[in-house]
Amino acid sequence: MITSLAIKNYALIEDIRVDLNEGLTIITGETGAGKSIILGALALLLGKRADLSSIKNEAVKCVIEGHFQIKNYSLHQVFTENELDYEDHTIIRREILPSGKSRAFVNDTPVALAQLQALAPYLVDVHSQHETLEIVSETFQMEVIDALAGNAEVLKLYQLQFEDFKKISDKLSALKLQKENASKELDYNTFLFNELQLAGLKKLNQEELEETYETLNNAEAIQEALSSVNGLFEEEQIGALQTAKEARIVLGKIKDFSKIFEDFWQRLNSVIIELEDISTEVANTAETIEADPETLSQINEKLQTLYKLQQKHSVATVAELIAIEEELEEKVNTTLGLDEQIEKLEKQKSDLREKALKTGEKLHKKRVDAIPVLKKKLEETLFPLGLPNARFQFELTASETFKSNGTDTLQLLFTANKGLAFGPIKKVASGGEMSRIMLAIKAVLAEYKKLPTIVFDEIDTGVSGEVANKMAVIMHKMSTSMQLLSITHLPQIAAKGDHHLKVYKDDVNEITATHLKILDTEERIVEIAQMLGGKNVSEAAIANAKELLN
Image 1 (cartoon, rainbow, N blue to C red):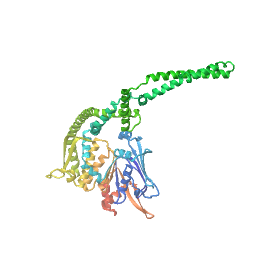
Image 2 (image 1 turned 180 degrees about the vertical axis):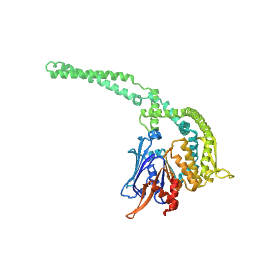
Image 3 (image 1 turned 90 degrees about the vertical axis):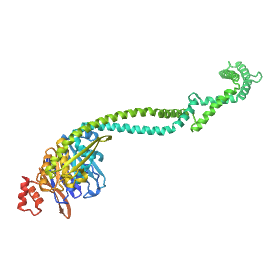
Image 4 (image 1 turned 120 degrees about the vertical axis):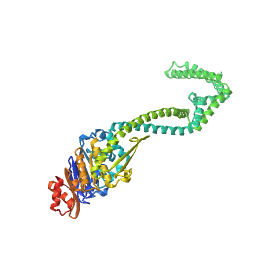
């Protein structure tokens, strides 16, 4: 319930604060006094988008703050799901800055507007003439039936199953689309993969192939060069080895005379050893190199294939080609494996569908059982409200089409008079009848579920006299189990309130401002008397007001 409401710098309101209590609180005031302004401020508090034009003084920020006692509302999970800090005494504050920027806070923590909007329906239920039109909504009608049927747990289970079914269905559709697109590329990707796989890339060493090719392709020149080198090493007269050995003999004669000569000898000796080793390897290599046209042709073929593949895929190395081969293999395998995945998802979808359908059947059966009870209660409630012949007809049809609240379709038909055929409620019910039907529905709901604070904005439109008195009785009865605020122009309803607030406006320094006042007993008598007979209050009006209050 709302324990207090403070509004600063909003529309015609400069600064008001009011404490609210349990039971039925009546709000009255002349047309244009600002009752709708208070509702507008409450709407902002509950997440309506802000408008800079609603600020009274554009140089100062607008602040609307509401205190809520929610200990008995069981809202811990709602707060958790919306990432809000739960407090039994919850404070919601909304600010509109002069810049036009809007901020919202729940228990002093900044929150997004979406979080506030998600929380609002659990705190306050505002019913204006516009909100009354939700009677014609199939979703609202089903919510009423479900409340009487006690379908909360079954409905929650169905919605979880339906959500799983939708996820699998979406995943399956995406997979089928992927298969459709992938199938178009499968042949080409398979061709590219096979082409790369046929090249045996993982067994190829491009550098070694190129080196072997150059060697075989120039075998004759290499043999000639190696033979020449070997000759330069080994020739008896001027061979490098022979010359070096002779020099070593000469140095050997003087190496004992000085460490310098010994160092010369050692270095020359090392050179001779290295030259001998090179000479041997050159000779051996020369013997191994011979022309091999067949091998040369095979290597050339491999290299040409490699070069073409590198050019085709715009890469320069074998490693890059292998990466492309692996990527293509994954694409091909993924495409080929889609059928198996699709088959698996089809099975999951079928299973989830069966589960959801069974839960939908449970909802349907419980709804069928609840409809006669709801029908009877609504008709009994409307009887004293000037609709003694009101009759409802609920056409509930089971189907296999999933919706967010089950598999049923519902059409609510209504007639207010004997002898007239039933018709869709939105076509055959007048505005006054719609208001009374909404009140009847809320009265019935109050017996079956814990409702939040309800605000009725002139729900009594189109009624008067004894019907208004009966509406007041119903509203007062509802208020014993919830906080109910009613904006009204009818004295019969105003008199039934446990508390009475008056909205009025006056001019101070040529500035009009809206005010809110809690009326005591004497002030209530005068207010109700004025509602009965106008501003010039007569003794008869006073007496009538006292009688209504008693």
